[in-house]
Image (cartoon, rainbow, N blue to C red; front, top):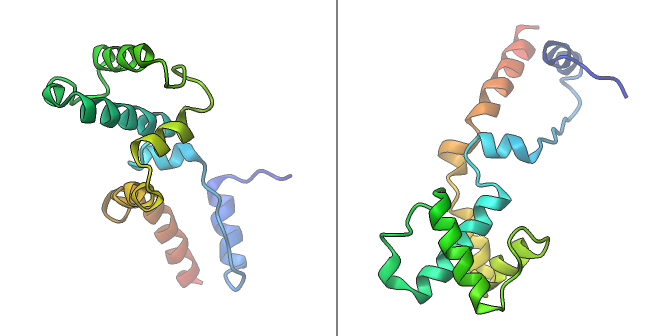
Length: 137
């Protein structure tokens, strides 16, 4: 497989503008553009489960990025004895379904990401560069 630099890729696009293109962008690109990582989603779900059963802690445990908040929530989950071990492979699917048992609610959770106004601005810059090069020909 041949590896191209970005400018080589753009020149290739220009020569093949009559051919449909698909770009596969990895998960890291999504995170950089504002979409939550799988780990962030898991921690948000853990917090939602915890707070729904401990509403007096809503203000105290609002920032899931703080280590002490994560530790306290994980300790509570561990003490319940019914939740997966922290970092285990089954956490993502387990907590998604536990936090939102109705599949339509899970779908809406992901739809609430601000993709239109936040997430894909990085790619628009590169795609607009490609479009400008294509029109210049």
